[in-house]
Amino acid sequence: MSNRVKFLDWLASGKPILADGAMGTRLHAQGIPFDACFDELNLSRPDLILDIHREYLEAGARIIETNTFGANQHKLSSHGLEHQVAEINAAGVALAKQAIEETGADALIAGSVGPLGVRMAPFGRVKPEEAYEAFKEQITALEQAGADLVSLETQSDLFELREGIQATKVVGDLPIIASVTFTRDDRTLLGDTPAQAAKLLWEAGADVIGANCSGGPAQLLRVLQAMRRAMPEAKFSVMPNAGWPEQVGGRIMYPATADYFADYARAYTQVGASIIGGCCGTTAEHIAHMRAAFEGAKLSQVSAISVDTDEDLEKLTAGQLGPTFLSSKLGAGEFVLSVEVDPPRGLSVEKLLAGARLLADAGTDVINVADSPMARLRMSPWAVCHLIQDEIGLETVLHFPTRGRNLLRVQGDLLAAHAMGVRNIFVVMGDPTSIGDYPEATDNYDVVPSGLIKLVKHGFNAGLDHHGDEIGEATSFYVGCALNPEAANVEQEIRVLRRKIEAGADFVLTQPVFEPERVEQTISAYEEQYGPIGIPVLVGILPLYGIKHARFLHNEVPGISIPEAIQKRVSAAGDRAPQAGISIAVEILDRLKDNVAGAYLMPPFSRYDMAAEIIESVAERAPAREPK
Image (cartoon, rainbow, N blue to C red):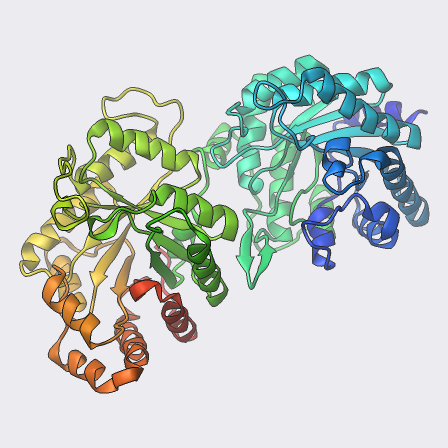
């Protein structure tokens, strides 16, 4: 029996076929830097590749992918290896064969073929026929070396992928798995939906179509179901990342556990997946747990995910995206540490990113990005949010003032933020232009914060604009609102807070607090009138840098009042005033830690080191809370 027939028989059996997990992140864990040529390791470090193949085979994988994801002429050229396409691909197949022979596994070899790494026309300069030839060169090498099938994976351009499918068909009769990767909004980078991808790939002649990489298991369950609805006659594969990556101590980490993957493996089979594996961040442990799930073993005390009914499926696939990291952490009752940064006044972002890295290493959960604070000209905060999330891997909260925006701009800006992956927003009125760089600038607005919260939560998050017209897909914003515990009219402040909460606000950030009892009194006043606030409150903390800083805030910034005793303490500290400011901040948090869900730090003068020191001190004493 040929391996093609064997593979097709496996598909026809209806039993799930287990594929392997990550190669790149496993190599990185072994000390290989991300900027190295992983494919060349087939020649220089075959021992590493062989060990990883063995791990997956021993865990139960029946399809292992060659270490050739980037072994095409375009990607190899960046390492000066474009003339070694055939050699590197052949070595990749040989190592997979050796691992199968040594373990005695009943497994097939999938030649891994990733995107070319260059854009095809009309989005780039590579012509379709050039893309076809590049795919053909690599796939020919894989076929001649003895690959059993081809896995065209992590593709984002459907037309480029179609060239890969056509090239495979010309090379020989190798079965084809064609797999697409999706962004956070369940679309490809070029905007195609799962349904569009499924239709094009199946009609192009792929034997199996599906999704890989992308986000975690939950997202790809949604994608898989959408693909299956579009092409119910197709065969499907699914290979998710182990969640969205996070940066911890300078390393990229993936949070999804092996038990969690096992639960989703069951769900994937119920929704119709024939081939199930893992992508970035997955290990042999994830694969072993999925194998056990297929065999019916009990793996953990976590309830298995079930899609036995349409209602089960609707619950799992509802909404476009899963919860943000911020909402998940607050919902789990964990103390959240957030830090505000100001966008740069010019083009340079190096200092800002260096500060964000420092905060990430210190244990910051999210970064708040202000929008033109004090009405001064600064870089767009959406761009800064995107840079921090992309470069640092740390989730952000976008400050979204209503002032200076009409309804048209408000809604366009919301769409732009969501498209860039920014889903936590903090709705505020914003500083009046009269106090800033351009006092003559227009200061009009069409909607107040409570109105904007309602527009987002009941409009955009339901897929509708202000007029009730569809916007294509629902957004999934997590929305914060402001509270000033130092307000002169507390009754008015809590009435406004009530309107914001009724409009759908998800969390609260307060103005800087220097008198903890004011927070306690404000919360008590709200609860006496309306009952429990019901959403998490993060208390604003602004560490003082010196006596001039303290007096300026007290006398010139509305909403901030600094007790005389604190001013005297900072003044007496002299050159050690910043350290005194840190101590005061920690003391305030210690006083309030049982009444709030976290801290919202505002380091003065971009002194991110001060915020880092507070975080490191507070994190050790952070309380556990009841989940909301």
